[in-house]
Length: 449
Image 1: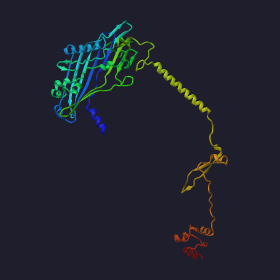
Image 2: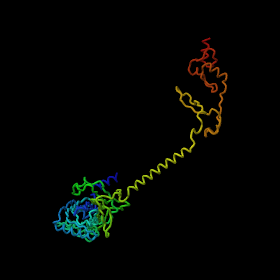
Image 3: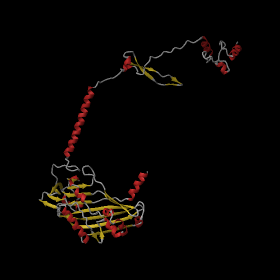
Image 4: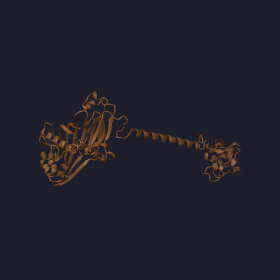
């Protein structure tokens, strides 16, 4: 119960933390395509023993929010920084338009203060088609690592370096971190999607729809003219042997002031969903990952959700399992035929039943046992518990006194020397011919004579 209660408290007071989240839909038949990138991080300032930092933050809660488009100088600076990073990664694609929204929220509690950072980029990509011969398009996919470590100021708010929010909104708190290891932890930039680029697309899950995407046309801003095309999708974010182990990125630093304080930055693993219209086959060009996109998949191409794993191999494995099952039943059938058939053990015709129960009170039980009609092979069929021969018991012949007392109707036992029942009952149970020695019988016999 204590563990469950502690879990509920932690879950109830914590905020889900995700790092960079990419969602992009690329149409090789158009010059631009939409994308969305979401950056999130949470910072915890812990003061388990109270102290001056607790007094400074106690009861505080505030938010800094805002939006801006590409007409804002700060957004233009961000576009330039992102395009510079994309070019350094070897990609020729560029961000042509961008909208930015940000939300920073501080909330103080009794044992810690949390600061949630969130920046959302929504824009369009251009120049992602390398070549197009009408039958096949080469699409640049090396632009995924949209990152910058520079300060980005939009409408007077710095949105990329977490510690700058404290510097601008909580200057007294900032003085505790300046020049310490905590400043390095809080100085890690928020707009960082390097891991999405570092994870090879061959490790992502791949799916495609070969039946046409009329239903999903609205998500691409297209009409029914795309009927007959397919959509290829790559998904990243699973932690496994194939995709690699993905864990939260946690950075921590301790500050010794009037009390011991702990600063912890928590950022979850990155996730991404990337789709292209057409069938995409992955390749590399000058070290940059690309996709060769065709309107339809090859006629003989079949894959599962995990990538280039032919379906025929799956069918072959199922066939081998079926053959193994048939062989097992065939061998089992032959083994049964080779076994001795018919009645095993003692022939029932050689057995005869005997009743072994006796009456008890007013009923008799139906118990019995079977014996051989003859003694043939008795040693092979006798009970293993039968170690000694049965002992015969004989009943001594009745004495004359017993016979006389029995004639008198007395229940006394001559051997035990007990007195007659007549004496115990106080009345004679015998006739005049009885030789009973009890006084009551003598008197009865005298009166009858």
